[in-house]
Length: 169
Image (cartoon, rainbow, N blue to C red; front, side):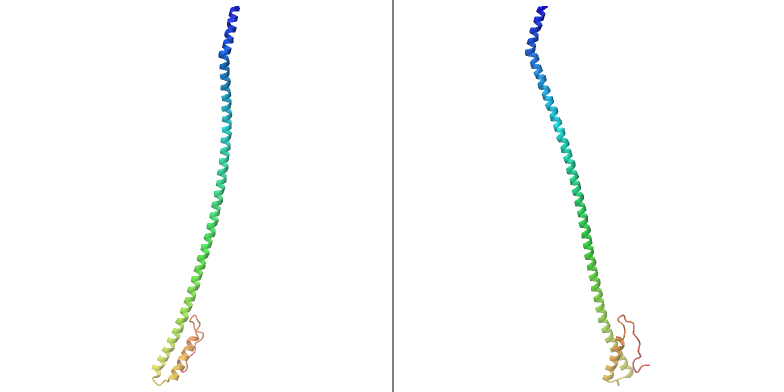
């Protein structure tokens, strides 16, 4: 039994020196690697969370900026629309005023021409009725009287008052 005990002790010392120490060292090294890997995993997880948070912040900021840009673009579009409408309205008003003025000028020209034609027609009518006996002075007087009658009308063409021509009843 002592021999077994001595053998066991020798075997234990040999195993301890050549087997247990290297195995224990291997287990210890493996444990350290596992701990380092766990630390790295935790560090990577923390970095991933930080990156996700930064990504969310960047996305939120980008959304906010894009919303502001859209709002600015809409404001610019409304301002541009208002400006374009104002310019179009101004051009339309200007065209309306110009047309109105042109029509008034044309009406005035036509009224003048009409008055001349009426005076000429009246002189011709009187000449035909009275005959060649009407003198140049009488023709002029009749033309002046016809002109005064035509000028007695309002600009819209309605008579102010009607007068009987001299000598016609």
